[in-house]
Each structure stands twice: as structure tokens, then as C-alpha cells.
Image (tube, rainbow, N blue to C red):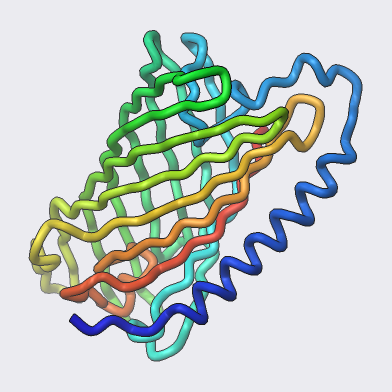
Length: 252
């Protein structure tokens, strides 16, 4: 199966991400506010698979930059999506996690359980599943199209902490349940064909930014047939494309 050559683009994106991360980490290491001993990155994180005390609620907001394939829109387009994410911890390492992403014409809501385990005081492992609903509406430029997508994702995470920094590596599998596409007065269901959408690998680095707040930088390499942001192009392929994401999220 032929695949597009995305090595140059992915290398440029990774270099930009690492440079931004290095500059930010350099600045954050200079922050030594009073009360250092009270901050614990393990309880100020969205991605580190560390078990939390029961009832712990953590949330953050940020920006997700998604780079759509050139083949979909005949040019490389980066779409910024606003994201709000939150977690709520339950006993025995269990919890619930949810998120909302939006770019007006493309939106996504996710919710599901997870389970985390501490292997030591520095290493952690966790797994989870999320049900997702994506919807889009395009009523401009002569279009009158809509889309509704149900899917689910399973992930495995491995995390490591050092001081006020947490590093998490994630692997994920994506499955489509149903897609309903509306074109003016006509609609079509299950247009995605085979349910397996693709897979991804992610890297998240979370670090203290103030006395009791943290920030997260993330890079996700998606290899999917469908992405909610690309739906206006009516692009549902029969193979996976490289769809990278760079995100930043601030706890508040």
C-alpha cells in the first residue's frame, strides 16, 4: 500500500515542538516561588497515569493545532481547535475523563472511564476508553452540509515524574461506530466503511508554571482515515493518513 511521504513535514513539526518545549522548560526552571514543597505534579496533571485521591477534580483549557493532509484539501491546512478537558478521580485508581473541542464548523465531545496504577513513586501506567461524538455544520459558501459521528477510543499510557515535571507516552486505537452525513435534503449513514479508523502515538510533558498551576505541551501523531476537522472536504479515505497535532493546555 502506497503512503504519502510525510517525513519532512513530521520532522519540522517535531523540531518546532521540541524547541518550544525547551524554551518553556528553561523559563519554568527559573520559577522558584514560595511554597515549593506543597506542589505535586502528580496531582496537577491531566495525562500522567498516577492514581489520585478520591474526589480529585482537575481541569484545563488550551489550543490544539491540527495539521490536515495535503491530499484532503489540495493544500496543507492547520486548524486551531479550542479544547477544555477535565478528570474526576474515583477510588482504587479509577476515574472519569472528558473533553470538548470546537472550531464552530467541527466539534467533538468525549467521555469515558480510566484506571491508573503506580509502579513506583516515579513510574505509572494506565489504560482507559472514551466514547466520542463529533458533529459539524457548514451553511456558508453555498453549502448546506452536516455530519454526526460516533466513535470510541482505547489508550495505554506510561508516565514518569522527576521533580515538578511529568512525561507521559501514549498509544491509542480509534474505532468508528456510525457516521451520518447530510447533504442538503439527503442523508447517508455508515459512510465510513470498516470500523477501524486508525491509531496514534503521543508525548505529553507537564510542568509547573506557577505556585499551584501546571501547563502541558503535547504532540500526537495520528494515522487515521477520518478526522472531524477534515469533514467539510467530505474526505473519508480507505487508508490511514498522517495527521499530527500540537497542543498546549493550562490548568485553571
